[in-house]
Amino acid sequence: MKKYMVAFLVLFFMQGAAAAHAGDFVPYVSVGGGQVVTEYDELGPSGGVKIRKSTWGAIVKAGVDMYEYTGIEVRTGFTGKVKHQFPAGTLGSIPPLEVSAQVNNFVSYFAKLQYPITSKFKIYGLIGATSGRITVQRNQGVGGAFKGWKTALSYGGGLEYKFRVRGSIGLEWVQYWKNADLTAIPPSTSSKASFSGASLTINKFF
Image 1 (spheres, helix red, strand yellow):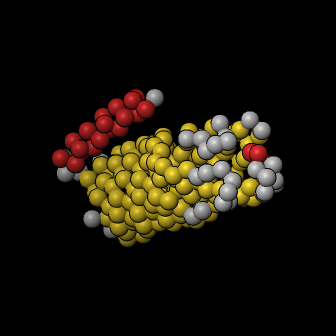
Image 2: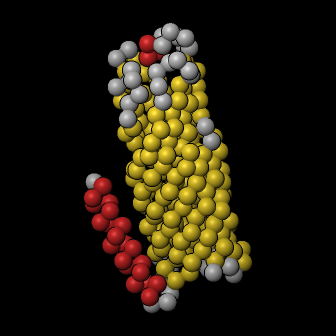
Image 3: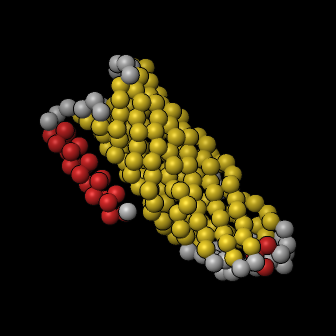
């Protein structure tokens, strides 16, 4: 699936480059922030743990709108930490087990499909991939920790209102990861993570 996704993005970017060469393109930069939902799951021989909590997140992005209906975009960002305490005996832990997870930083690459409802208002969809650095920790003396990068399929969409010639405000939702497989932390036998974000953005066109 990843190979097909990469091929799709390459073809889309090639089409975008042709549009840019024709001169009908508008570059932009954006800043934004909002709510992020982070999920973390572990499974082990004696049970498992599951965290699903909301935290904050921030993004900076840059892209190019090409013609009326397409574009490309890259963004980077980071999220807050989520944690939960589980009762003694969870995953074989003698003391209560506290698990925390955080996507310290991430980079996303998107192909963008958009549709102008009016001259000032448009909707758009995003599809691409996100590489993120996730840190999972347990309370001291209980198991270990995991730190590493993971790349997974991303998708989402949003709406944008242009309040001035070179400025707009937007609202979007993106599923950056969905059940991305991670390296298991003993004594667990598997672990996976998901995170999605709803953001308010301020956009500047050039």
